[in-house]
Picture: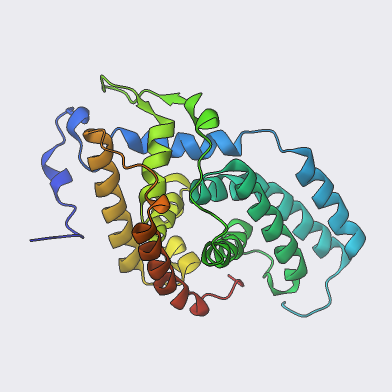
Length: 58
Length: 203
């Protein structure tokens, strides 16, 4: 039986046992990190060029 | 507000907000299609489309959400034209390593990214929007043009699949290279794209 929306498991684990937290798996931070690592990259020149060209078009 | 004539200062505001959102577009695109160069192409395409459609942007609404809709639609179109073959730049991601607290084995971000890329596109984008981009379920639903419950279900399934893959280290090779898998992905894309007509990039 599949219960997709069933997220009540989290209720039972609130005793500092963060290792086993099913709703916040260890990789969740990694996903954010993956995203943030790109956000923090310096913007390549090609984007700066494109953005400055946009002004000419208008 | 949505009149065709924009003042110079409104145009300047649009340009500034568009510029600010570029790093986020790059991150979303990278998560969606894996290869940095292709992701950046997609972002450039998105910027041009956003610029051309700027009259449809309502000042005061979220530029990030608005441009994500444009990027996502461009991605879906490109996917259907077969531009992305799920190629993946191993070198870039390999340099990054994450060590979640309380976990003995570090998780390579490259493994995570690879696992992410094996997910069906609609689950991948849902997880990216909510789990990485920090959008609420409601915002993600608006971006994807579907019900909130659908987004919740997609995120839940994506999380479960990723957990399973990362736990037993059984990350499939790029399934997109497999013809059957690729066909399946394209079929799913049709479903995703079918719902996209409801999302006009104005919100």
